[in-house]
Image (cartoon, rainbow over all chains, first blue to last red; front, side):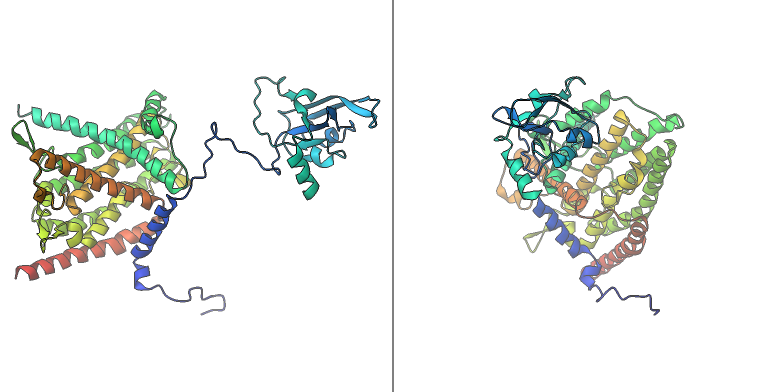
Length: 166
Length: 345
């Protein structure tokens, strides 16, 4: 026995184990037991998956009482690896002084990486839990402010998640 | 008039067998799904029970693609051989006791051949030609592997399959399957049914294992082994030609389960039903029901085994076939002979 040889088996199989049949029967019982466990399938069109707060769905803009938090710094557009975000800044008499006149995300380009959310200093762009995206043309896939704005109240689970885990 | 009876029987059995294949396909899918904590097909028809019909319609409508390098004639011939063998084997299996209809007793078997077992072994042995020719004619290396594997598998298993039946034949003293079923209708000590599974447990197990190899079901589905061989022998088949292979696989399952039932589980014998004093017609129908129930149990067993045991490696299959099954079945023949000699002394 050379030094490379290792004793792996600690004891020989008994006769019953060697003929396999009792072990196969045990396995069959295990298989049959699985049948009575609850099903894990989500019956899609009738049942929908409700994603938890950590889910990275489509990005949305957060607004408070109709005023978006975004200050149009353009960081999200800069960091976006897929070049999906386009921001045009304009001035506003409000405290934040700047607001996005135009904010567009091309949902065909978006890869749901969440970099925009990470980089945003105002927590203005965040990932929602929406995953159903259907378009019938390329133009329709470009989401403007009308489709992106969501109230902070609505997005509270995600905002709280970000506060706790970022 | 002599011809009418077999023709009606053939039509009924053929229809029943094809319908049963479709049902077994669905049962297999549903059962498999439940084992894996899924629902399985549940959209077509009530509870998904029309899925097989939708699948057949789809397969018929599909384009039949034949590879350029394939041997067209053999490529067409192979699925025909498969399905013919699968369907004709059922001809010698009795699926019920004699049934009294219109004042006449009818035997519920298409052809009561006196060499029934030999016929079945010959026909199931033919089935491998379908797979081997399909593999060869596709001119695709994976198909060829599948075809070769199926023939090697057949050689390893056919011997022990035949030998495991010898014990049964010795006990019954006949090759006629109807008589073998009838020989199992008695009782030991007045309460244990004389089924061959009780007198021939080793033969039952070896035959059962061999029938898995015969029907190309897991753990012996080497000829189609999806992860290794794409689809094995039916890689290059599409449309209804693939459908025929698929159908013949399930028809083979039904035939082998019927065979196991007839040879080892007492066929249509319903224990103690004779003593209930029923109308002969009702009793005959009950016996057909008993036969179908036993088949159903065996088929469920096929499915559960499929999701319990992993696929055997090629050399493991050969080892099991030649070094385990063959000696065990020969020893079983010997032991049966010794016991029978001892009992008749």
